[in-house]
Amino acid sequence: MPSTLTASDRPCLTPTDDPAPVVRAVLDGITAQHEPETFLWIVLHRPDGGATIRYAWTTGGQALGDHVDRLALAGGLDAADWLHIGHCHCTRSTRGRIAIEAYALRPVLADVENGERSPEDRRAGLRRVIDSAAAATGQTPRPGCPRWLGMGPALLNRRH
Image (cartoon, rainbow, N blue to C red; front, side, top):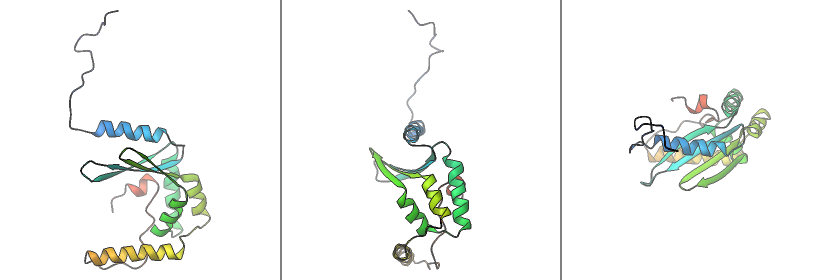
């Protein structure tokens, strides 16, 4: 059966240098493969050696991630705790040059509510890395550890 669409009615594909639609489609595909209430930390490695970090959440993940962050900050949790708790509930995978870290937010919430903290040796190791970076860049390190980094969009997308 011949098409009833005229040339002006047919979708037109045009070449573009804008990778945004393809990146969006890839991110949507990755997100669709994960369980609800999951926070995704996605690193897109570029051919030039650079990388771009994107965040995504599955159904229910944004609200739950923001709730986790509010509790963590109110409880005084910091970057060392974020690394420790996140490590316990992270599944890592790759898709070509894309690295994916998927954080199950319900178990993260349980650890935050139960007051789980980073072991002191891990906290001290993070402090050494921060002090080394400060010395290498001629900065004066601040005492303690930086704040909880975030698992929800409100904290992760906030400008510092």
